[in-house]
Length: 191
Image 1 (tube, rainbow, N blue to C red):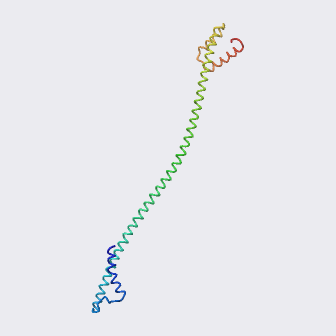
Image 2 (image 1 turned 180 degrees about the vertical axis):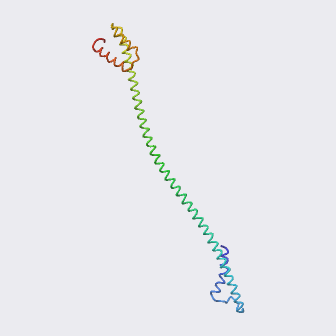
Image 3 (image 1 turned 135 degrees about the horizontal axis):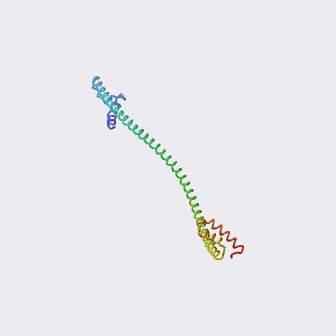
């Protein structure tokens, strides 16, 4: 670039002399042939300067073209990277939506399980209380059976009571017996 400026600076006086047509700076004693040689030298100097300017401009244009190509190449890479990042962002957003839906569904399930657990705990508590009450009733029934066994002289009834007392019957059978005895008690046989 400096060469181009130097050439323009040195060539500009020669150009101004030839354009003005004023040859007063050239000595009038020179002959036409010398004047022609001087003009040829000026033309060669101008041609050489223009040639160097052309080479400099060509190098500058090639360099600029390479820089532009590099810039476009980098822009293409940037565009591809930006597009890929945009796709990844969209995928992440979609996964985030799905995770939020799954989380809300799991929270609802968790609440439902918690409620069911509380309900089961309350039912277990009720069943344990009923079991205690049933054991109390069975204990009272055994006491009544024992008293009845001592007070009833009938052998057949004693055998039934012993079989009831010694057998591994279920609570249902015991309850039926309790109910029968309660009816028996209500009739006034045993109070």
